[in-house]
Length: 109
Image (cartoon, rainbow, N blue to C red; front, side):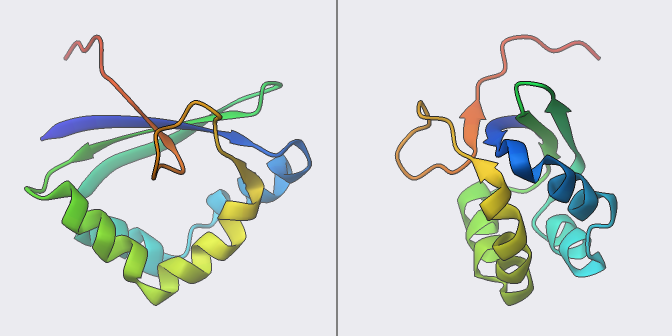
């Protein structure tokens, strides 16, 4: 298992919409996340800065393949069509990232 984290901004005028979307995530999306070997997935929101922090446990063996499977799923593409306009990527993210991946510097069980 690998603990992973990521950050992104949230458009100020889309905060309530983003909260509404995530209060009732579509069952197909929840199933897809599980099939892509992600468990214990949580997204936190920091207001008023409007920063999102996501953390999850990855239980697979090929993260890139699982993320490609997730990105290719038509229902997920539809879900993203609602979520992506709400988000504001960090200027400091790496090439190819939407959410900026984070390095773990401390963990305690």
